[in-house]
Amino acid sequence: MSDQSFPTKARVTCGIVTGVIAGTFASFAMDRFQAIAASLLPSDGGDEEPATQKAADAFAKGIVRHERCKPVVTGFRHPPRQA
Image (cartoon, rainbow, N blue to C red; front, side):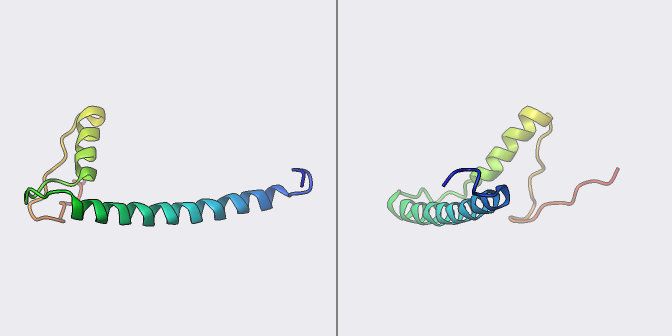
């Protein structure tokens, strides 16, 4: 089948569907891998900050030159200040 006989809209739709399926599978595979790895790796019992928060800190310090506010309660963040 040549590109001429396959309309652009169909190619875009096919790409979107393929991307959604691949992303869903990758997300599931990553979740299963992390669950298995967590059960195999030794745990020090520490309450270490999640990698996403570490990445946000690095971004804020390096790019924005502002330190992220530490939450008082785990899972809670203060709303941004109004200007």
